Image (cartoon, rainbow, N blue to C red; front, side, top):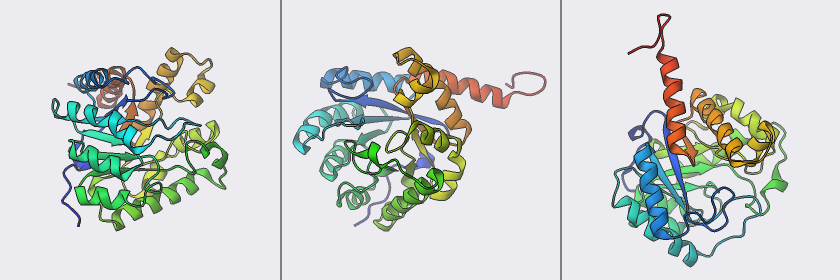
Length: 285
Protein backbone atom coordinates (compact mmCIF):
# COMPACT_ATOMS: atom_id res chain seq x y z
CA UNK A 1 0.00 0.00 0.00
CA UNK A 2 1.32 3.44 -0.94
CA UNK A 3 0.98 6.29 1.56
CA UNK A 4 0.60 9.95 0.67
CA UNK A 5 4.00 11.68 0.68
CA UNK A 6 4.83 13.49 3.90
CA UNK A 7 7.72 15.46 2.36
CA UNK A 8 7.83 16.81 -1.19
CA UNK A 9 10.90 18.19 -2.91
CA UNK A 10 8.90 21.39 -3.43
CA UNK A 11 8.70 21.75 0.37
CA UNK A 12 12.47 22.26 0.50
CA UNK A 13 14.30 25.53 -0.23
CA UNK A 14 15.17 26.18 -3.87
CA UNK A 15 18.85 25.61 -3.11
CA UNK A 16 19.00 23.42 -0.05
CA UNK A 17 21.98 22.08 1.84
CA UNK A 18 21.88 18.54 3.21
CA UNK A 19 24.00 18.46 6.36
CA UNK A 20 25.94 15.26 7.04
CA UNK A 21 25.93 13.41 10.37
CA UNK A 22 28.17 10.34 10.11
CA UNK A 23 27.54 8.04 13.08
CA UNK A 24 30.47 5.85 12.07
CA UNK A 25 34.01 5.12 13.22
CA UNK A 26 35.43 4.93 9.68
CA UNK A 27 33.97 7.51 7.31
CA UNK A 28 36.61 9.07 5.05
CA UNK A 29 36.10 12.62 6.32
CA UNK A 30 34.99 12.65 9.95
CA UNK A 31 34.82 9.03 11.04
CA UNK A 32 34.58 8.76 14.81
CA UNK A 33 33.96 12.45 15.50
CA UNK A 34 30.23 11.94 16.01
CA UNK A 35 30.08 8.26 16.89
CA UNK A 36 28.50 8.81 20.33
CA UNK A 37 24.73 9.52 20.06
CA UNK A 38 24.83 12.68 22.18
CA UNK A 39 27.67 14.12 20.09
CA UNK A 40 25.92 13.19 16.85
CA UNK A 41 22.63 14.74 17.98
CA UNK A 42 24.39 17.95 19.01
CA UNK A 43 26.10 18.07 15.63
CA UNK A 44 22.80 17.59 13.81
CA UNK A 45 21.19 20.39 15.81
CA UNK A 46 24.14 22.65 15.00
CA UNK A 47 23.80 21.89 11.28
CA UNK A 48 20.10 22.75 11.45
CA UNK A 49 20.88 26.02 13.23
CA UNK A 50 23.47 26.80 10.53
CA UNK A 51 20.81 26.55 7.85
CA UNK A 52 20.68 22.96 6.66
CA UNK A 53 17.50 22.12 4.74
CA UNK A 54 17.85 18.39 5.53
CA UNK A 55 19.91 16.50 8.12
CA UNK A 56 21.29 13.22 6.73
CA UNK A 57 22.13 10.58 9.36
CA UNK A 58 24.19 7.56 8.34
CA UNK A 59 25.53 4.60 10.28
CA UNK A 60 27.55 2.82 7.60
CA UNK A 61 30.53 4.26 5.76
CA UNK A 62 30.31 4.24 1.97
CA UNK A 63 33.92 5.26 1.31
CA UNK A 64 35.78 3.12 -1.23
CA UNK A 65 36.70 -0.22 0.34
CA UNK A 66 34.40 0.19 3.35
CA UNK A 67 33.26 -2.98 5.09
CA UNK A 68 29.51 -3.61 5.42
CA UNK A 69 27.72 -3.15 8.75
CA UNK A 70 25.15 -5.60 10.11
CA UNK A 71 21.55 -4.40 10.42
CA UNK A 72 21.46 -4.55 14.23
CA UNK A 73 24.64 -2.52 14.57
CA UNK A 74 23.46 0.09 12.06
CA UNK A 75 20.17 0.40 13.95
CA UNK A 76 22.03 0.78 17.23
CA UNK A 77 24.06 3.62 15.76
CA UNK A 78 21.40 5.64 13.98
CA UNK A 79 18.07 5.27 15.77
CA UNK A 80 18.91 7.33 18.89
CA UNK A 81 20.36 10.03 16.66
CA UNK A 82 17.42 10.17 14.26
CA UNK A 83 14.99 10.20 17.18
CA UNK A 84 16.92 12.88 19.05
CA UNK A 85 17.31 15.25 16.11
CA UNK A 86 13.76 14.80 14.79
CA UNK A 87 12.33 15.57 18.22
CA UNK A 88 14.14 18.89 18.50
CA UNK A 89 14.13 20.54 15.06
CA UNK A 90 11.62 21.14 12.30
CA UNK A 91 14.24 20.41 9.63
CA UNK A 92 13.53 17.08 7.88
CA UNK A 93 15.79 14.18 8.84
CA UNK A 94 17.07 11.78 6.20
CA UNK A 95 18.38 8.28 6.86
CA UNK A 96 21.39 7.32 4.75
CA UNK A 97 21.06 3.55 4.33
CA UNK A 98 20.76 0.77 1.78
CA UNK A 99 18.79 -1.51 4.12
CA UNK A 100 14.99 -1.55 4.16
CA UNK A 101 14.85 -2.60 7.82
CA UNK A 102 16.97 0.39 8.83
CA UNK A 103 14.93 2.71 6.63
CA UNK A 104 11.62 1.52 8.14
CA UNK A 105 12.88 1.89 11.71
CA UNK A 106 14.33 5.34 11.05
CA UNK A 107 11.12 6.52 9.39
CA UNK A 108 9.19 5.29 12.41
CA UNK A 109 11.64 7.23 14.60
CA UNK A 110 10.95 10.51 12.81
CA UNK A 111 12.95 10.54 9.56
CA UNK A 112 11.10 11.74 6.45
CA UNK A 113 13.57 10.85 3.69
CA UNK A 114 15.68 7.83 2.70
CA UNK A 115 19.04 8.47 1.01
CA UNK A 116 19.97 5.18 -0.67
CA UNK A 117 23.39 5.05 -2.35
CA UNK A 118 22.41 1.80 -4.07
CA UNK A 119 19.35 3.33 -5.71
CA UNK A 120 17.23 0.41 -4.54
CA UNK A 121 19.59 -2.27 -5.84
CA UNK A 122 20.95 -3.45 -2.48
CA UNK A 123 17.67 -4.50 -0.85
CA UNK A 124 14.62 -5.71 -2.80
CA UNK A 125 12.30 -4.43 -0.06
CA UNK A 126 13.61 -0.86 -0.01
CA UNK A 127 11.42 0.82 -2.62
CA UNK A 128 8.18 -0.74 -1.39
CA UNK A 129 9.08 0.18 2.20
CA UNK A 130 9.65 3.82 1.25
CA UNK A 131 6.41 3.92 -0.73
CA UNK A 132 4.43 2.40 2.11
CA UNK A 133 5.77 5.05 4.50
CA UNK A 134 5.11 7.94 2.13
CA UNK A 135 8.73 9.01 2.53
CA UNK A 136 10.88 11.06 0.21
CA UNK A 137 13.61 9.11 -1.54
CA UNK A 138 17.03 9.79 -3.04
CA UNK A 139 18.05 7.28 -5.71
CA UNK A 140 21.81 7.41 -6.27
CA UNK A 141 23.87 5.96 -9.09
CA UNK A 142 26.50 3.44 -8.10
CA UNK A 143 27.86 0.28 -9.64
CA UNK A 144 28.91 -2.60 -7.40
CA UNK A 145 29.36 -1.98 -3.68
CA UNK A 146 31.69 0.35 -1.76
CA UNK A 147 34.19 -2.54 -1.65
CA UNK A 148 34.11 -3.11 -5.43
CA UNK A 149 32.80 0.07 -7.03
CA UNK A 150 36.12 1.56 -8.19
CA UNK A 151 36.60 -1.49 -10.40
CA UNK A 152 33.31 -0.64 -12.15
CA UNK A 153 34.28 2.81 -13.46
CA UNK A 154 34.08 1.79 -17.13
CA UNK A 155 31.69 3.76 -19.35
CA UNK A 156 31.22 4.30 -23.07
CA UNK A 157 29.89 7.81 -22.40
CA UNK A 158 29.82 8.56 -18.68
CA UNK A 159 27.16 11.29 -18.86
CA UNK A 160 24.82 9.28 -21.05
CA UNK A 161 25.44 5.98 -19.25
CA UNK A 162 25.03 7.39 -15.73
CA UNK A 163 21.96 9.38 -16.79
CA UNK A 164 20.30 6.36 -18.37
CA UNK A 165 21.11 4.02 -15.47
CA UNK A 166 19.93 6.60 -12.95
CA UNK A 167 16.73 7.13 -14.92
CA UNK A 168 16.06 3.39 -14.69
CA UNK A 169 16.37 3.58 -10.90
CA UNK A 170 13.99 6.52 -10.76
CA UNK A 171 11.52 4.54 -12.88
CA UNK A 172 11.84 1.58 -10.52
CA UNK A 173 11.05 3.89 -7.61
CA UNK A 174 7.92 5.33 -9.19
CA UNK A 175 6.81 1.87 -10.35
CA UNK A 176 7.06 0.77 -6.70
CA UNK A 177 4.70 3.57 -5.68
CA UNK A 178 7.06 6.35 -4.58
CA UNK A 179 5.56 9.69 -5.52
CA UNK A 180 7.63 11.41 -8.22
CA UNK A 181 7.17 14.69 -6.34
CA UNK A 182 9.10 13.18 -3.42
CA UNK A 183 12.02 11.88 -5.53
CA UNK A 184 15.55 13.14 -5.98
CA UNK A 185 18.28 11.59 -8.13
CA UNK A 186 21.99 11.65 -7.28
CA UNK A 187 24.63 11.02 -9.98
CA UNK A 188 26.89 9.45 -7.36
CA UNK A 189 30.02 11.55 -7.64
CA UNK A 190 32.95 9.38 -6.53
CA UNK A 191 30.99 6.13 -6.63
CA UNK A 192 32.39 3.93 -9.41
CA UNK A 193 33.82 7.01 -11.13
CA UNK A 194 37.31 8.31 -11.78
CA UNK A 195 38.28 11.92 -11.09
CA UNK A 196 37.91 12.71 -14.77
CA UNK A 197 34.47 11.11 -14.87
CA UNK A 198 33.39 13.06 -11.78
CA UNK A 199 34.33 16.32 -13.50
CA UNK A 200 32.48 15.31 -16.66
CA UNK A 201 29.33 14.61 -14.64
CA UNK A 202 29.56 17.88 -12.74
CA UNK A 203 29.86 19.79 -16.02
CA UNK A 204 26.78 18.00 -17.35
CA UNK A 205 24.37 18.31 -14.41
CA UNK A 206 21.61 19.98 -16.48
CA UNK A 207 21.79 17.17 -19.05
CA UNK A 208 21.63 14.52 -16.33
CA UNK A 209 18.63 16.23 -14.71
CA UNK A 210 16.87 16.26 -18.07
CA UNK A 211 17.60 12.57 -18.55
CA UNK A 212 16.34 11.45 -15.14
CA UNK A 213 13.32 13.75 -15.00
CA UNK A 214 13.52 14.63 -11.28
CA UNK A 215 15.57 17.19 -9.31
CA UNK A 216 19.18 16.39 -8.47
CA UNK A 217 20.98 15.97 -5.18
CA UNK A 218 24.77 16.13 -5.53
CA UNK A 219 27.32 15.00 -2.94
CA UNK A 220 30.89 16.20 -3.44
CA UNK A 221 31.92 17.27 0.06
CA UNK A 222 35.58 16.58 0.95
CA UNK A 223 35.93 13.84 -1.66
CA UNK A 224 39.41 12.73 -2.64
CA UNK A 225 39.18 13.75 -6.29
CA UNK A 226 38.89 17.38 -5.16
CA UNK A 227 42.28 17.12 -3.45
CA UNK A 228 43.75 15.72 -6.65
CA UNK A 229 42.44 18.72 -8.60
CA UNK A 230 43.48 21.50 -6.22
CA UNK A 231 46.65 19.84 -4.93
CA UNK A 232 47.41 18.52 -1.47
CA UNK A 233 45.18 16.40 0.70
CA UNK A 234 44.63 18.46 3.81
CA UNK A 235 41.17 19.26 5.21
CA UNK A 236 41.42 22.96 4.39
CA UNK A 237 42.15 22.26 0.74
CA UNK A 238 39.25 19.85 0.43
CA UNK A 239 36.91 22.30 2.16
CA UNK A 240 37.91 25.13 -0.18
CA UNK A 241 37.32 22.89 -3.19
CA UNK A 242 34.01 21.76 -1.72
CA UNK A 243 32.76 25.35 -1.48
CA UNK A 244 33.64 26.03 -5.11
CA UNK A 245 31.98 22.81 -6.24
CA UNK A 246 28.87 23.48 -4.15
CA UNK A 247 28.40 26.87 -5.80
CA UNK A 248 28.97 25.26 -9.20
CA UNK A 249 26.33 22.59 -8.54
CA UNK A 250 23.71 25.14 -7.57
CA UNK A 251 24.61 27.25 -10.56
CA UNK A 252 23.98 24.19 -12.74
CA UNK A 253 20.53 23.64 -11.24
CA UNK A 254 21.04 21.15 -8.41
CA UNK A 255 18.19 21.17 -5.88
CA UNK A 256 20.20 19.85 -2.91
CA UNK A 257 23.92 19.62 -2.23
CA UNK A 258 25.18 17.34 0.53
CA UNK A 259 27.91 18.96 2.66
CA UNK A 260 29.80 18.63 5.92
CA UNK A 261 30.24 22.36 6.59
CA UNK A 262 26.79 23.90 6.30
CA UNK A 263 27.67 27.34 7.67
CA UNK A 264 30.44 28.02 5.14
CA UNK A 265 28.34 26.61 2.32
CA UNK A 266 25.42 28.87 3.23
CA UNK A 267 27.69 31.91 3.04
CA UNK A 268 29.00 30.85 -0.37
CA UNK A 269 25.50 30.26 -1.72
CA UNK A 270 24.33 33.61 -0.33
CA UNK A 271 27.11 35.32 -2.30
CA UNK A 272 26.11 33.43 -5.45
CA UNK A 273 22.52 34.59 -5.08
CA UNK A 274 23.59 38.18 -4.39
CA UNK A 275 25.59 38.17 -7.62
CA UNK A 276 22.65 36.70 -9.51
CA UNK A 277 20.32 39.45 -8.26
CA UNK A 278 22.79 42.24 -8.94
CA UNK A 279 21.95 44.89 -11.52
CA UNK A 280 24.28 47.14 -13.56
CA UNK A 281 23.83 49.68 -10.78
CA UNK A 282 25.01 47.28 -8.08
CA UNK A 283 23.46 44.94 -5.55
CA UNK A 284 19.72 44.49 -5.68
CA UNK A 285 17.71 44.94 -2.49
